[in-house]
Length: 105
Image 1 (cartoon, helix red, strand yellow):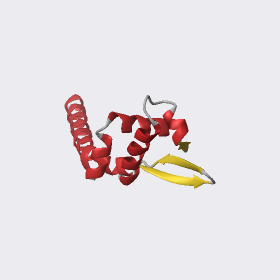
Image 2 (tube, one colour):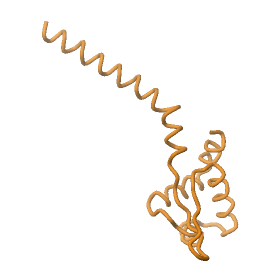
Image 3 (cartoon, helix red, strand yellow):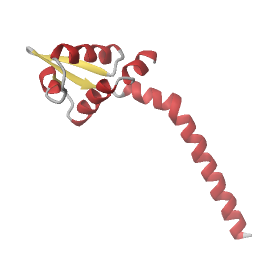
């Protein structure tokens, strides 16, 4: 999970993930069209995303396509966000139940 957090810490890598969310399966050239940096720099960011398992690459002939893999983000949600969300939803449900009991006397 540390690799995922490290990968997500950089705004360029988050932007790459956003681009893949919009249109999945893009080549390096397609991704570079949206960024103001060299192909070599974009490639370095893509390697970090791939090492964090946030993207998956697939070769189609000579073309290397990059696909978003949202599973590690879902794992972060389950571990770090979801459990806090559940507590908040439970508290709201309890509040609603108490208010209904008071209104019904």
